[in-house]
Image (tube, rainbow over all chains, first blue to last red):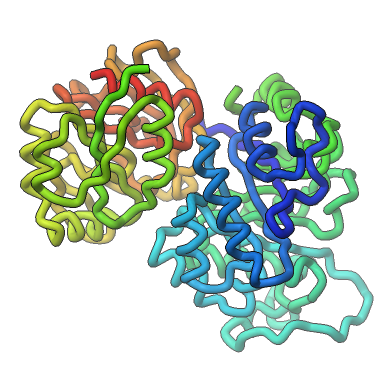
Length: 276
Length: 202
């Protein structure tokens, strides 16, 4: 049976891990390669690097990190952040990433999804969706959305999901319905969805189960739950209640609240298919 | 550690970094090869691959290495196809059309049906069906990392390991010294590395 995956995510800025892995046995907690190696030994099923480097000049630094990691660990590696063109995708993959994660660029330039899928296969195109429950606050800083996505705007959707897509690291609203956007990206070549709840991210109060349910019900590709892990039960809820195929977490692993093994043992005892 | 020489076929479809590193990790001296001459001279051959079946066969034909690959397979020297490389060993694929493969092992490549999420992506168990040299020192039902949308239908007698994803499909095939593995050993941690090490020892 296909196992549910446990995925630690590392934010990387200019080649260094932000919120570094908090373990004394690492010689250099700021080194993404060391951190990835540590997580591999802990039983991670996959590693995600999110490049949060602001400057374009540092792209080559990230590619070096990707290459050194791919040379060191024998696990799937997904890389996101700042990937805007087919050439960016090619460079990232050719340096050893197995998948790239597209977020802002997918919204601003939806053709990129299909172009990437046609060139490299759907299996390496992950679309990351940052979704937020719609609140009453009126917003005036909407992103300018390509005309082909007009029909996915919340006011144009027959039955809105109640969730909106944000871009630019969760800062800019798009007016797009999150579930309609999820369906769109899958129809246009996304092989996987990395679904982050902006409301839950950083709260340790549990994944957004409603958002997960709504998404996993309508797409036929794997969905990675992200944002909110704080207890062992949260992982179980995302999988069992939310239908997630994989669960991603950052801080609970980095700060040593849980070991990956611990999460896996817990889920396995609960009857979830897990690679132990 | 003994050093084994192995040639990896580079037919421009896939990133070879990870597979080369994995082979080196288990003691291989790796040579990348793109020519019929190099393939014929190799002692052991790895045929990797990701992407579409049709495009892969086109690249193989345009590099002029199709005959060399078939001859190598028939020579009795050890050959292993990985992921798409495994699928290429069979007669025919129905991936977005109908394409002939290398026909070294009888069987066909078909799509998963729509009751499961496609691609089949992630860790799944390999259930041993028979003794295989690739399984030396490994336990039954260990997890390997898969990424694929099509699978092989083959005769029982060449199937060494099966995996269940809605349908049971061959994860490992072995016919003489021709091997195929559907999962990615270079992404399957210690299980995958051991499989590669076992191949080097064939």
